[in-house]
Every structure is written in C-alpha cells, then in structure tokens.
Length: 196
Length: 279
Ligand code: SF4
Image (cartoon, rainbow over all chains, first blue to last red; front, side, top):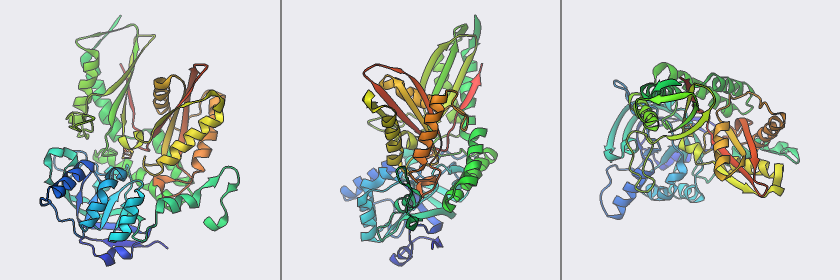
C-alpha cells in the first residue's frame, strides 16, 4: 500500500530506498530549480572542468520555470514542466549525487536505469497546478544564470510540496502500472480482474 | 462603415490575455467537477480536487493558473463593415499581448527557435484573421501551453483508411502523449482541408464549450466514439491511471482533396484557457 513520506534534503540512499511508486511525498526545506537551458549550462560547466554554482549532492531538483512574482509575493505560479527535455542531462546530474527530481511526464529508459544505479527517485507534481503549488513556496532566490530569466537556477524554500513517486530506485514506473490497471482493450472489454 | 480604434483592440487583447490566464471558464470548472465525481481512481479524484483548488486560488489570489502562460494564439473575426483606424491592426494586437503579459505578471515563454534567446515580451502572438459579414470585431485570445502543444500531430492519411484510420491516429496520439500534456485533456481533431487547414481546424475545435454536443449528428457520434476509445487507454488524470484521460473530444471537419485525408490532433491540457472579446 502506498504511504505518505516527509522528505527534507539532503537525502541519503536510505531516504530514497524506502520510497516506492505510488507513495505520496511532502517535500520541505531547500530545493533547487532547473529546466533544460540551465541543465545545458551545468553540463557545459562540468565539461569545461569548472565548478558548479550548487553542490547537488543529496539534493532535490525541481523542473520549473515560474511566472513572475507580483510585488509582495514570493513567486508566481510554479508547477512542474515536462521532464523528458531533461532526460539527456539526468544521468550526469545523478552522478553528482542528485537524489530526487520533481517534474511531470515520462522519463527515458536511460533515466530509469540511472535511478537504480545511483539510488534516486523521480517524483511527479501536478502539472498545471501552478497556483496551488506556489502556496508551498516560502522563499525564492536566483542562485545561478540570472540571464535565463524564468529558466535561471532558483533556490526555493518549500513546505509540504505535494508529489507522488513515479519512478523508484527499483526500476518501477507508476505511469505504466497505473495505466495498465485502468486500460480497457476495445476488443475484449475490461482487462482481467487480476490487474485491478 | 463602423470605425474601431486600434487602441480599443490593444486594450481588449490585453484584458483577455490576463483574464484567460487567471480565470478558468465555467465550462471547464463544470467538467473538472464532473471528473471529481466520476473518476474511479482515487489518485485521479485527488488530481481533480487539486485542479479545482488551483482554479480557486488562481482566481482569488491572482496567481496564474499555470506558470506556462502560453504562446498567445489570437483568433480574429473581423466584420467586413469595420474600418480599423489609428494605426496598424496586427501591431495593435501584438501590443495588447505585450501589455497583458507585462502588466499581468505572466510568464514570457517565446524565444528564437535556434539561439533560444527569449523575445522578452511574449510576442509575436500567432494571429488568425477571418473576414466575416457584419460590423463587429470578435477577438479570442488563447494562451497555448508548450507541454500539450508538443504532443500534437498532423497525419496525411490514405482516403482508404477512412474513419477507422482517423480513430487509430487520434488514439495513438493520445497514447504516445501519455502523462506529458497534463491530462485530463481536451482533444481537438481537424479533419479535411489541406495539411495546414487541418491543424487550424483542430485548434479551433478546442474553443467549443466543453461538454456541449456537436451540432452535426455524424460528428457527435464520432466524438463519442473517440472519447470512449481515448478513455479506454487508462492513462487517467496526470497519467497516474484512471478512467478520465480526456474530458472531451471536439471534431471539426471540412471537405478535402479526393486524393487526401488530412487529420490533425491538437492536444489541449486541462488548463484550457481562452477569453473572447467582442468590439
Ligand atoms: S501542458 Fe498545460 S497545464 Fe501542463 S504545464 Fe503546460 S500549460 Fe500548464
């Protein structure tokens, strides 16, 4: 049965190993943001042998490009962006010690394998719930690549940001399992009861 | 001739761009409420609850519904009795988008396709203008998110593939999209015309009120069949598994060349934002 787990980085292998697909997590503490443009910069810095602006060991990365904050507010809408655009950079990030990513949508087989190899998880937040999720963000500041605007790397302080485990470190995929449970084949009617 | 000032157009576009990004339409809210009642999967129902709460926070606290405030697609129906005065018509619309995205604290999401440098003000909008009878000017601003647009497809079918081919391509498109376009989605299907026309029809199909029946009985039946087939995929809200992958399928059709059967599938996420203004 799925459980609810509080996650506060930095995370260890042990924190991640207990997570299974379908578990609900509430993320609190400091997390970092990056979309594909920022990933490219990070990977380029690494390739050039330079130091990264953030130490990602044990950290959680949130794939988000928030809308501008109104005066007096911490941030604008801040829901997840589609994760597959980051797939090609993800194994490198995991190698650096990144422990979890929050996004939406499918990951590549390479990412799912890398999650097992480096003991990390992929979490799904509700895509299009940008206003709701913004309520969980208590502080936001740009820590790298300010010229990227909404795509800059932000340091966020969050409280109980809700997400669900999509890919755990055992190679499982909630998108596949969930879809299989509710799929109906048009020829044969409802799928066998064993799948329910 | 009725005169309309470009300043009025700019104002209307600006207000529509802002309103669309903060206030979800009544039809969408009703569809989300129905989903919350009807979805069998517990995590699916939870998603519907979150989306309803998201809409209420967006409206009350003035936070955009989604951080992807979209590329502004602007549909214009220009009455042939209207005379636009006071400047360039297209530029008046672009200025409305510029002001709306600036003053409305909306995310600017447009960039140079190759260098990826942001244009800075969410222009240029994509404008589709039609000349129609009458002396009115109708403007519909449709902020279109990238996540769902990326999952959309155009197919040039062999005429022999017919209705079954159309159903197959729509289902395939939704299956391949999976969780990526933020289901529950709305599926716009354009059939006929040419390559580019089919795509335009598919986008226009998204503007119809969600839950309203297609006035053409043949298309209404096709929509029902498509909706069933798409929902049989089991993708469900956010792809977590469930009965409601799509809240609606809307089809628009027009004659095609005897050699062709163009079919376009435009996927729209649940943040189906559009706002109309009539001048
Ligand atoms: S697909 Fe729609 S709801 Fe999802 S992030 Fe993009 S604009 Fe927002």
